[in-house]
Image (cartoon, rainbow, N blue to C red; front, side, top):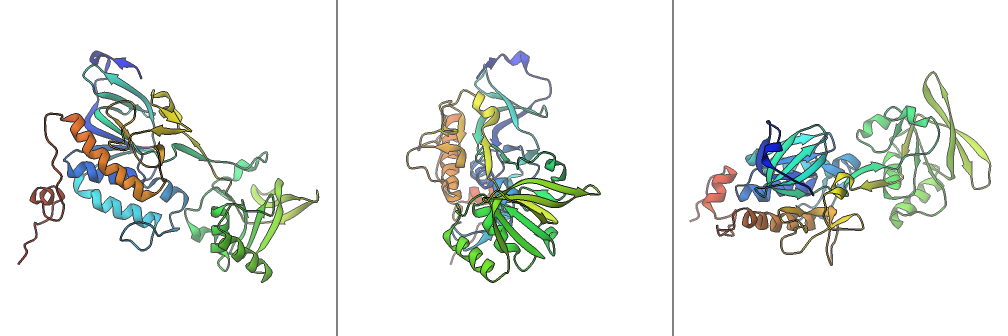
Length: 356
């Protein structure tokens, strides 16, 4: 990480106490924990919408392990978090990623995004999930022309697939989940996987085979090796089976779930300790090896790490307290409770309750 004199800073700089990289659930909750300590934050995310992987990959898929919330979708969780952090009026900078981080002479960090947005911040919180991620694409020459029209790597609007002939490719949870979801809604559902073995929940695999036996959907072992188009529309795919025979399959929509290819991107150039594409942190402050830069959520690693949203929430709370102590070492940081603290009630914009 380079160090620049203050004289080299651009004239228009956003000065702040905290910059959060990543607007997924953990990044959003980081806003809340910082807000309780009266630290305002700016949030940067490479995606054009808030919510991270929860919204990008499975907005309508149920989540069951959020404390006190029996079930919610990724979109509902995001909406609730946005409502929770509304009192703190965070500023979002979407559709851009951090391209440069440099330490300044006064100890602050200069942060520059791919769109040229420049910050001068006391702390950085990396909550970037698996980093900058891209779906693994299907390798068939020319088929990329249909991406976003008939070829999709995620489902953002399930209604778009109603009454359509759908082909789903993949053998993981996403492929199985969406295949089962569309049975009875789509005109037809065909699942294609390169082998008769799956990296998905056994119950989902069993349900898929049951539906195939009932002729509610089809499963084919093979790989897509070509396609046919007519009037600039995808009409058929060519599927080569394990027997070497290539068969034609008509379709309206093609969904491909080959998983994600996570990339740390520019984060890898920040001089932080990295272990297996994750940032090494301690379990007291969730600080990286660079004081003032913290990492929370799936992006970090430490002994006993579990990649759960609720674990990320815990990490965000401890990181916020550590950041307050880092920024203001001469001020004692008191633990207060939102139930009883008039100060926190004021920060949250709620009335202090009275008890008989």
